[in-house]
Image (cartoon, rainbow, N blue to C red; front, side):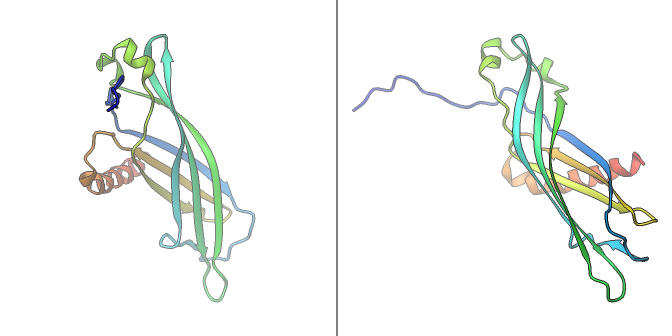
Length: 174
């Protein structure tokens, strides 16, 4: 029987749900017919975490930097017998994140030195609009990063709530 010299465990030092937004106007390189529209049922967005790093000032954690890979597939449907046109946009985007409650967490400097960033789940909501002259697509992506202490059984419920909150936030910001 061997001896156990070290026992390790992961524990959550801090958790916070954050929202990341990315807005842009995308010029189209093709001419679209009058009456064309974005087919929301055929369009999709996929988001994956590439990297998450903590931002430190001395022994104190002050925030995080999250890099996401974003893959957008937008399908524009044209009227009559013209074919639908798929557009794919894939890119990485880095978001600086300030953690609003980090200073209230009272994290021990020794724990802060060993801490790392871990993301357990993402919810993405993409709002798309085709310009009236059909030369650009305006889009706003809202990504909700859920808190790690959240029980998995509640993820679906919170994802739906986050989607409603995201749509409300986007409508108020117009």
